Length: 338
Image (cartoon, rainbow, N blue to C red):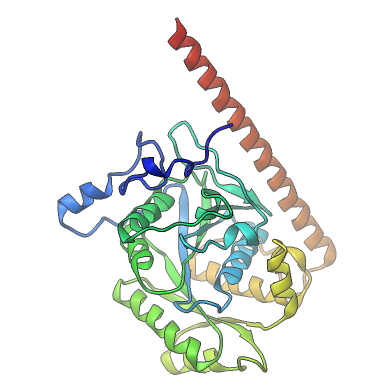
């Protein structure tokens, strides 16, 4: 059985915290420091559009929103993926009911794990579930670079980056190393969350990342009804959508089956579809149009069957890749013995 990437912490280096062999990898962080300049922004290989989902403040349901957006994009005919950039508190493995170490390609690129027709990558796949990461800024920065540019996405129309709370190293590293097509800011309606969300918007404006709009989450009697919509109207920001506070959204996320998959006919799922249709239009992405307001049960059933078949084929492809990798290692060992 292959050891986990983090099975031997003593071998980790600041320029390679994920322990990925360096063949074909991007320049090291030390090379960047030697140049004494800002890192070069570049596209993520094999990905057409990249959006960042941010909140700046924790606890507003951003990761749940990110997961449902990625799933909604997939339900509308787009090749969708999600990258969990929270090094210390990854949420995507639980939301997608996935675990286990990713396999690697011949070029030592990480192969995403898939479920519900969406590809995903997260630090949560690379460390034991009960493990902890105690890293300083340099290690975190390089780990983010590796997650951004050393994953083989295999061709995506859109990749959703689930950003951690705050406006620190991770956010700056992403905006400096990746050409983002836009940012989506999530906030609950109360003033405390909005004050922090403004910091995230300010950061994106400073680094010239277009803010596509805001999503109001958990609206209702507890947090308020119009805080985000009022803020958007006052600051000329697009309100992408409103996701009301509902117990089933939390329950679905907790059992690893987000609302878009668990309750495809619900008004809550349709709210996510409306948001992704708006975003797709902003980004110039063609959608199938099969997931529409009031879609019929047969239409939804066909979409779910299609997603299930995609998931099945992805699992089979991963198994074949693993078998191929084992055979190549066996061939190499036999050649060495000659």
